[in-house]
Amino acid sequence: MDTRRSLLFVTNSELGQASVILAVAYEFLLQREYEVHIASFPALQKDVEQLNDTAARLSNGACSAIEFHPLAGKSMKEAAPPGTEFLDLHAPGTTGALFAYDNVLPATFAPWHGTQYMIGYSSTVEIINETAPDLVIVDPLFSQGVDACNAIGQKCLILSPNTLKELVLDRQPGGGALWKFPA
Image (cartoon, rainbow, N blue to C red; front, side, top):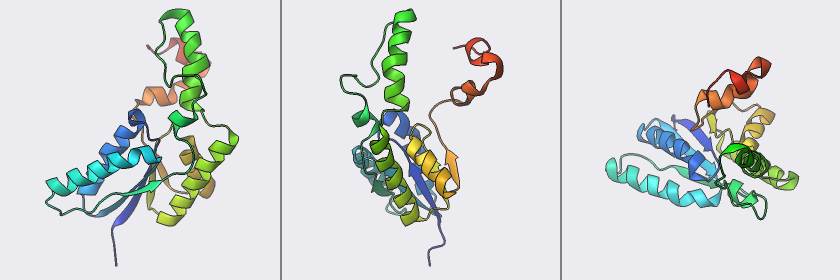
């Protein structure tokens, strides 16, 4: 009987978001009392395999491997609006800010249309049910994962490469996000 605790990491496949998930998953992998799973889009599978190879080599084969679960649907980058280079560089100033609000933010925070969103959401729910983890660790920009955990009552933790400031700024009263905290 396996008495290890099961952890499921759910993330977008873009390394800007996934790198913190990979780093933390690797650390839990080395602690042999955890069974580690990562659910993401197929583009991340190669990175998970490299992580497994590194862990096996450095531990002389003493640790198990992370099990990868491919999510159905389009990744954040694949779902970005056509004609929009994902996370375009933009000019400074008002013109650049307006470009970012019109192009960069939608591609980052809400690139999926309804059907695409539901495919990722349903796939996440299926993987959570299949793996039955003790805890799901989820990338906050992968909103399908956050919604899936909330909808089925799954115990979860948000893990982001961003600071707390970026995650709670919008909750500041009196428009504090605009005047209270430096950029």
